[in-house]
Image (cartoon, rainbow, N blue to C red):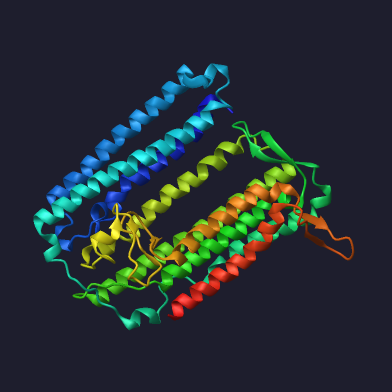
Amino acid sequence: MSTLNMWLTMLIPYLVVLLALAAVPYISLRTPFGVSVPSGARQHGEISRMRRQHTFLLLIIAVVIAGLVGLLDVSGVGGIPTAAAGADEASAPMLGIVGTFGLLLAGFALYIAFHRRMLTLKEQQGWQQVQPQQAATMLSFRNEPSTYGIVWFLPSLLVTVICAIIAIMSYDTLPAIIPTKFDWNGEAITTHAKSWGIVLQLNMIQLGMIGLLAFTNKAIGSSSVRLDPNRPEQSAVAERKYRRGISLSIITLCFFIVLLLGWVQAVALYRGSMGGEALFIAVLPMLFAGVSIFYMMRVGKNRDSFDIPSRGQDRHWKLGSIYWNPEDPAIMVEKRAGIGWTINAAKPLAWVIFLVPIIIVVGISLFADQGIFVRKSSGLGWTLDFSHPGAWFALAIPIVIILSMLAIANHRRH
C-alpha cells in the first residue's frame, strides 16, 4: 500500500471524529451544550452564535493537531522514524491514534467550556422559570412497540453461526500459523499458532456485539417516555418514530459489524493476507458511522418543536453529558449531548451494563491465543484447560451475564 493510502486510512477516522464533535450542538437542539431550554428559546440568536463559534474553534483545533502530527512525522521528534525511514509501518499508525485521541480530548474540553457559557446564558435569560416542570406520559404509548423486536437480530446471529460452522469444519485443514494483525499493505505482521481460541476469536466477538446491541435496543424500548404536556399525542408520534429510527440503525449496525468481522475472519483463516482490502476494511466503518449520524439527525428533527423537559435538572448532568442522579430509578436515560441513550452513573447496575461487554471483548482478545480449549482425554469434543487464566475467564463470562440479567430483571420488578 502506498504512503497516500496509509495517510487516508488515518485521515478518514480523524475526519469522522471531527464531524461527530461538530455535529453534537446541532443534533441536540433541545439541550444545546447539555443545558435544557424551552422550545421557544432553542433558536435564540446567542445560542446560534455559540454553535457557530464552537464549530469555528473546533476546526482551528483540528487543523493545529493535524499540523502537529504531520510535523512529528516529518521531523522524527522523539526518535519517531520519519516517512523516509520507515514510518509507513512504525510511526504512522501511532501518530494517527495520538492525533485522533488528542482531537477527542480537545473537543471535549471545548464542549465543557461552551456548556458553562450556556448555563450562564440560561440564568441571565431566566429560561429555567418558563420551562415546564413535568412531562406528560401516555399509557397508550406502550400499546405499540417503539422499537423493532429481537427477531430482527436473527440475520446477524445466522451469519455468525455460519461463519463459526465453516471455521470448525475447516479446522484440520487450516494452516498451523494464523495471522491476527495486518500492516498497511494487508500483509500479516502478527501471527499465532492455530488454536480453537484463535480460530473462533472473531465469532465470539460477533456474539458479544449481537448481545450488546440487542440489549441496547431492548433497553431503549423499555425506557420511560416523556411527552409534551401541551401536545402529548403529537409528541408521542414523533417519539415513536425517533425510537424506531434509532432501533433500525442499531439493527443495521449490528448486521454490518457481523458481516465485516466475518469478512476479516475469512481473509485471516483462508487467505492469510488482505492486500488492497485493508484500506477498504479500515475506512468502511467510518463511512457507515457518518451516514448513521446523518440519518439519526433527520429522524430526530421532528422532536425539536416539542417542549419536553429533559430528564433531571441541569445539576444532575455533570459537564453536560454525564447523568448522575441517585434518586432516579432509571438505569438508562436519553443523552443530552449527541444521539441515543446513556447510563445513570449513580446506579451500580448501570456500570455493570456498561463494563461487562467491554471486559468480555478485551478478555477474548487477551486470552484467545492461550489455547484454553483442549481435546477431552475420554469421549468426544473439547474442554477447558484450567491451567490457563483465560479458561477461568471463559467460565466466568456466562456466570456474569446470567447474574447481570437477573439483576436487571429484579431492578425492573421494583
